[in-house]
Structure formats: structure tokens, C-alpha cells
Image (cartoon, rainbow, N blue to C red):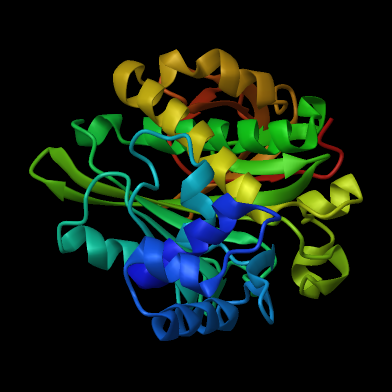
Amino acid sequence: MNAGSARVLDALRNAGEEPCSGQTLSRELGVSRAQIWKHVEALRGRGYRIQAGSGEGYRLVGTPDRLYPEQILPGLTTTWLGRTLHWFEEVDSTNRVALDLAREGAPHGTAIIAEGQSAGRGRLGRSFFSPPGTNLYTSIILRPEVSLEAAPAFILAAAVGVADAVAATLRDPSAVEIKWPNDVLLDGLKTSGILVELGAEATRVSHLVLGIGVNLNVERESFPSEFRSRATSLASHAGRGIDRIDFTRRLFACLEETLDVGEKSGFEGLRPRFEAYFRMVGRRVSVLAVDEQETEGRVKGIDHVGALLLVADDGETRRMLAGDVTLCRNSA
């Protein structure tokens, strides 16, 4: 959105129920009435409902269900996260866009949001179901002053941030669970995925890209058959629609707080909060490591850096730093 249209939108918002005449807007903004009309038409083209009656002026009566920067930024409470915000109708992957921007020098906290993704990516090269206009797909560029060894703390910190945002939105923390390392579940069904990719310089992190997809308003019936039995959305769980703008603001605020703690104190600073959402202890699972080696056993817990402790079938306790976890049948 150009600056002129943004100023007209701000004026209409500030006026509330009171109409703004073209003459008043022209005088206050220092442009012609013809230019005011062009800005109003541009706003209508973005989905804003603006009434205009003869002699009554303009009045904003409806806003679009779009995650535009001008919708999110006015109510955003963060200090650094999302203050630079790029919006797209559709991209192949928000992480791909964010990685390109990171390599070009985009600052810490830059966020990318897309209404839909044509090739959304999950962990281990999996695809992420990304229907348009219903959910939240965002990637955030981070430039922490940490070593490569400290990078996993940001994955776990992001999981806590997403879980906090979901719990606050639904007002039901007991339904929210983190499946190690960073899937957020509702009553055992996946509602969010997190993908972290990084760039390095020697032994230091040059940038991290934190990609997050949260199922907000997609109906469970519309999931592909391979996902339907194990995924849900906040709306399906709550039985009501979720305000995507409010959720995005809340998520960014929660993430900023948990990421700050993670950078300052590592996983230990977030461990009690992670464990409050972690309900896998004692359950039988299969862990597929990055090297494709599969290990089965019972979950013992999480250690001080966030590694999964697994009592394998041979009786040994294995320390899993990364991998994909599947609950085994009869896992209790």
C-alpha cells in the first residue's frame, strides 16, 4: 500500500462512525479531492468497505480478512519482531522468501506473511498443507549473537511461543501440547508446524529463518486424506472462527518474549514452560533420525539443552538431538 492510501485509511479509522468529507481529507492530507478519491478506490480494491454518500463523506464500515501490514502493525505490541513486515497473496514458500531477504541483509525481526503457499515446506522435506486465506503462514528472520551449538534453543523457544499463543487464544492451556521437538498439538492433533533454517559464518549463526504455519480457520474436512486423521485447526477445536489479525499480533508478541529468553538463557530459561506442554513422558515412540536410523523406546524426558531422552528397547538411554517422533500404537 502506498503512503497516501495508508494516510487516508488512518484518517477513516480515527474518525470511527463519523464520516470524513473529501474536502476535509484533502485539506488535512494536503492533496486534491481527486487524489483522495483515487486512494479510496485503491483501498476498496484491497477489500476495505468504504461508504460514500452525496454530501456525507467517506466512512470505513468493514475491513478485509487479510493479513496486511496496515492491519497488523497498529495493534502490534512487539519491540522488534514484525516491525518490518512483507505481505504476499501467494508465494511458493515464506521460508524461501525469508532466506533470500536474509542473504540480502534484511534486519533482525523482519517477518514475511503469505495468504497462501504453493509449495509450503515442513521438517524433513515434507510438504505443508497451505490453503489460501484461512490460516497463518509466516517466516521470521533472526540474527542472534550465538554459536551454532546454541541454535537448537531457538527451535524449542519457538514451540513454546506458538503454544502460548494457541493457549491464550483458546483460553484452554490443558488442550495444548508440544510434541518434541516443535509440533504444537490440540487434543493430540497437529495444529502447527515449525521449520528452522540457518546460515552460518565459521562457528557463529549469521541468520536464522523461523518458519511457522498455524491452522486457524481451515475445516478438518478440507485437509488432504493423509492429514485428516492427525491434524486440526483452532476453529475446528473451538467451534468458532479465529480472528487471524489478532492471532498474528499475539503470536508475534509471544514469540518475541520466548525468543528473547532463549537467546539470553538458552533452553534452561524456558525448560519449565516447555515441560508444562510436554506430555510424552512414559509413552512409547519411534524416532527417525536425520541419518534415517530409527529407534523405538519410551520417552524418559528432556535434558538441559532440550534433547529427547529415550529409553530404547535394549535398555540404554539414548539422547536424541534431532529427529521425527511418531507415537507407537498402544503407546501408553
